[in-house]
Length: 244
Image (cartoon, rainbow, N blue to C red; front, top):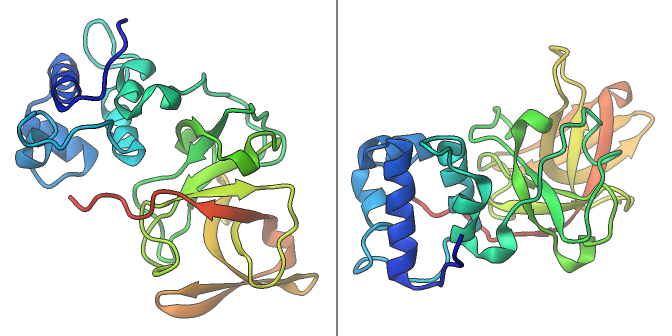
């Protein structure tokens, strides 16, 4: 495969070719990735409308879920992720059933990104390998941290600190303290994978876990026995997803 430059013409041509190879119309592809309509896709296929440069990784992640494995021959990971730049080509996914952030191996360059399009009433989502979106480049602070990972924020419950679709990077080995922002994993009452909450830590003790959310303002309380883990958020990513 020839390397792709970052001109508007080459990006838009590749998006158009991948969409057609997957068998989508513009309207069908837009619906698949959560955009409003065909015009939202058209601007990524028209070199006169697209500003140029590699695509945002959050957008490419949405494209990847719709495209990978489709078409003849099946579209491969690297064909989609080169739209975000060569540094975002993912490594093979780990199929381990280990608890997220505890026993998963982490490379010095990439960490897994988890999330789902729609969260629960308090922004919670299932945190398991089934909701592993891809692997992304680790920030310097996490490059050599075993078990480091990232999640996409679901919903608006932590605005204006974190926005819907924002990527947050997690250090599972650093002990969070009161006031830190965390990813808390809570046992699923339906015996499924743990539920993940991106919140601010109020208290974590034998009496239970107390988390704060901003929008609407409230506290979430969990019995100590239901808490799987509380992991420290090092930093946020790109901010809001593009509003389609």
